[in-house]
Image (cartoon, rainbow, N blue to C red):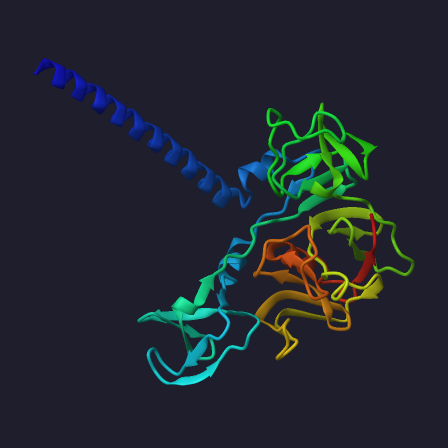
Length: 336
């Protein structure tokens, strides 16, 4: 009997230890959430600021507003839950906002209904660019992929070295060429190949540019914003997929602005898309624009049909910042 009592005490101690560990993890997680709510910035972002370079606050209210659902191909549209079929979505890339859910159906903003089983919920990216205090204090960039650095340029990655996560800010201390690519030293004895990092590179102001202007570097997939010759902001973007949808190189001016608009194209074709309420739109090259994006988190890579996709937080910042310069110059360069 004493043996069973002793064993029971051990089991109880183990269970208590596990419960305490989970409680500690939960408390730490809650502290992180509270920090985000209070500051509008994730602790990871805040900790990686360099020389006055800080992330802009995430536009949480906008992100909540732009939580849309992706529609499966062939989805039917009904006049009521379990009602009559009144239409359908074509093959392609479509999103809808829902205003109500009832009996396995979701009501769209036009009053019609779709089955919830045909939808996939999507959350807008929380990525946010960086406020720049007039000049870069160092050569900075973002990590594009989860990465284990290499001990020397061109060498295999070393699992014993520090891990870097996607969107983490890094400081480039040195550059060396090895094989086909440049390698960047991001910490003493830690090297990363250039295709894994999007660099912030100061741009030259184009002739005739407005005082407030932006540069879009296609190679780096980075947008930088300026007042005169002073950089004030930088972020990653997603430009047009090449070669079919490449964003045009050249110097343009914004000719129309809208807080939101519907975007669609290639009706009946293999690249059909239907995107309602695209936020913070600034058209600069005919129907090509800078705009916020709620349907992907692929910043740092080509992704669009030609537009310059930005996170909703970044697009809102650029839209508001340039409100006094409605014809803002947009200089698209090949880079790097």
